[in-house]
Length: 187
Figure 1 (cartoon, rainbow, N blue to C red):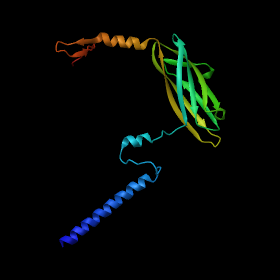
Figure 2: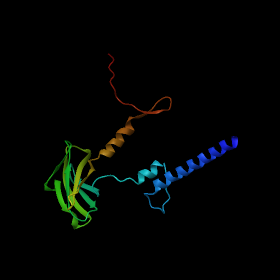
Figure 3: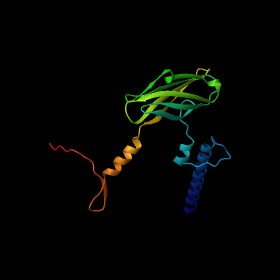
Figure 4: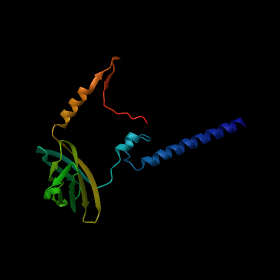
């Protein structure tokens, strides 16, 4: 009986290994057969994911004097036909003005489009212009992509760096701390 039991266990183990191999083969079926497949690695799976939305990407630079300036966008897209509507908005701290706040481009004009947007900030600081791109192909497919363009107005970085350095204090124990004002109310 011991031999029959050992044979059954060995057969069950072989079937288990075979099924495990089939599961790996089924997973790799959707990939390029020449490429090695790693199963169970989140880093590898994350590299292969694609964000849903319009096939549009952005680059930007900004120029300006004082609190007024211009953001120059380079909008790249991957469509052959249709239209792309671009809209820039600000918030209570930064406003967009001028006719170029909204622009519609013909997607058959090439893969890159230039777009300039004028802005005015209420104060010095770091702000974001929000951009919405809506692509509509001639087939009626509509897809969108959002982008936030970082705009720095004034000497914000220098002010923050100086403030952080002056607040650092070395305690008698040798530990460096940043002293912050606080008010505690016990009721």
